[in-house]
Image (tube, rainbow, N blue to C red):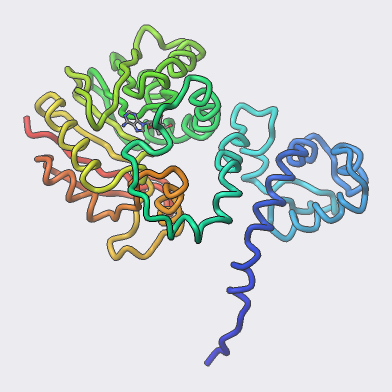
Length: 333
Ligand SMILES: C[S@@+](CC[C@H](N)C(=O)[O-])C[C@H]1O[C@@H](n2cnc3c(N)ncnc32)[C@H](O)[C@@H]1O
């Protein structure tokens, strides 16, 4: 029998130090410098403008975290994910997303007080009174990860023959931009809070899809949804709301869809037994910092929201393993 020890608990107690090193590496553009040839500690020090001692400290942790590796000649190279997503000169740079929640750091260390706070939650949480400026900063981050997710959606789901998609809480429009670029004849409407749609328009222009993607400002819980759509997608806003509100928006979507239409709910989802994945659990917890009523939802709950709304052929599949699932349902024709 293996002995019980404290290794796991000690790692957990200091896990924030790993986050801090990752943020510092991003700030110093470590992965870009390594990609461009900084292959020794001295070269990393020169490229990042820090001392050799500190470069050594940084590189030693990055090697231990498998962010950096050594090649056959002993020179530093990026791990494959860092080379693909953490090089700031690349189109696929996801740095803004990786530091998306950095502003929450002090709040996480006040979590005990927040858990003890008896104030009732608000409905919109983070999005209450969102301004265009805040939406612009927020969606610089979601765009940097959402375009990849949007591409994955179009590889996973065949929308051939569909005419119009509503993209609920569409943000930067990443899913719509990819969908209309992939499926001939498809149009889309990004539905999001009015301040956000100003920013959506900027991304639609940048991607040259304003002739096929429009926007509609509103609150998907309380306002009417777009009509005339045979596809609905709602991505990455599941833990922002509680069960009754998710049920409300799924049911409203069912009512608004054309007969025979389909809905896809993509979100961080707990397994049926409610035990993990950890990422889904923590996104639910993160809502405490925004005072919303949001929480993590299980796969079974998502299937239940769809069935209660009237959808048929309901199923839930992995979208990004251990991160996101996709719940699907069809409105009877
Ligand atoms: C995490 S972002 C996801 C954006 C996009 N779906 C993606 O995956 O890239 C969540 C989006 O939902 C929007 N949202 C949240 N609550 C909303 C509501 N009640 N009505 C409309 N949009 C809402 C936010 O403004 C934000 O743009």
